[in-house]
Image 1 (cartoon, each protein chain N blue to C red):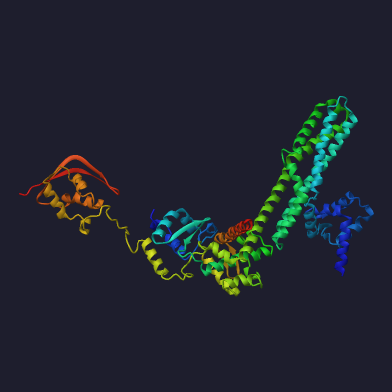
Image 2 (cartoon, rainbow over the protein chains, first blue to last red):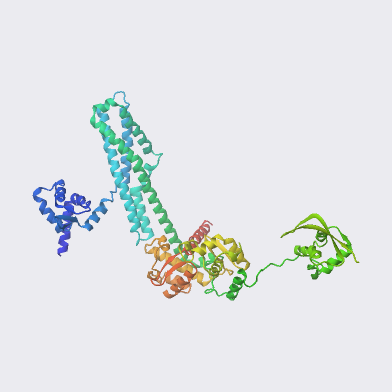
Length: 414
Length: 186
């Protein structure tokens, strides 16, 4: 019960002294009694009430009493206040847009007044005053709106859990409609506002050269300087921030739409599994493995594969090649040495033996031809004499090239 | 370069033969990171060596796996499809984000898998009638590279190959819708 009274009391005090508590929450260290009294004074607390208020603030746990007449702000209160203080304030984006378009309207008015045949000074000063206030308001509201929108979008991301995609989409669409969409036309560089603000900057610059007018009004000179700063802020910071809000909301929307598409697709497929099986029939969804496949003999295949690939089973697996021109009989796949000696005997004298092999044993595989070329060199025949030439013989086969000193053969039976 | 000279080629081939699907998710896993990068770097060599042994190694959506010879869907494939689709649906129904499925440990067992008129019917179609069967399947899917499975907390994180399957749902849904539209136009 006591806690309830205390909390009500806290709310009462918080409502009554919001400005003071907000200021106190900015102090991170211990607040001395003198500092505290100074804060109370700056918030208009009469001296007679100061002690009573300090006690009340301690009783409702806004302040903690520390040693040596010092105080600290309850960290829970400080966190709460600081959190909400940083949140900015949402403004209707349509209102903000209309305010900004109001600047454009006043810009035109200023132009007319500045370049009228007879300058109506009072009307001119009033227009500048209106512009000054409007631009200042837009800067303030706009900046708060940016902060509040970003916090809102962040909150939506963080607190989205527990809500369905459809709920989150609906919420985001509402936020976009109220707080973001109307800003888009302000961001567009070709839209009315962007062009007007450039004009306004020129007009304010024109004012700067009108020393006569400026000399007549101290207020005008000050407002002109402030206008330049605020316009600069709106043009360079605020509009860029509006661009960021729009882009962030769009990204969130796209990702939510994407999520919705996935969820809908998955639900639709679950409701029609037969169609899923038909559409996935030709695909490998899960590769069969040793433990899951009913594929008989896979173990054997795997072992064979591993052995072959890692050269354990067959040291040099080679594909078998058949000669392009089929020989007369199986035996002629190989050129037997007897065949070679018989050919030499028939020819009696051969000027270039490698060239002879190439033309007479053309149908045999290249390696067999190479064997025939080198036979007289490697295993001499008693009836065959070599005649060595000084010329080089070169011949290209598909897989290798033969390069050797040319030689001829003579059959002579002594 | 011959396959014999590529480091860890035997381990890679063995994993592939057990049905493991390599994917960019392996880049974050110290157990498979090196294997994945070797495989990607020498993919043509692996493809030709495996082709020689009668296997077709394919890469689709950055997922590398052995294609099965028999094009008929296995029951394991059907179960994986239903369990993954249902997991996505249940998780998002509870307000979870799709991307969290690939980043957070999802307490899958806490989901309402056997809701009457819904999950129970879909799971029954692929022969699953109890949570233990789902758990067994998820453990098998871990060996195939589709999920990270944490036995102690009964939670999982989906990996890229699972995303490929889930994306199939979108493709199939599109096809079904467009064929329904065509029928409507006729």
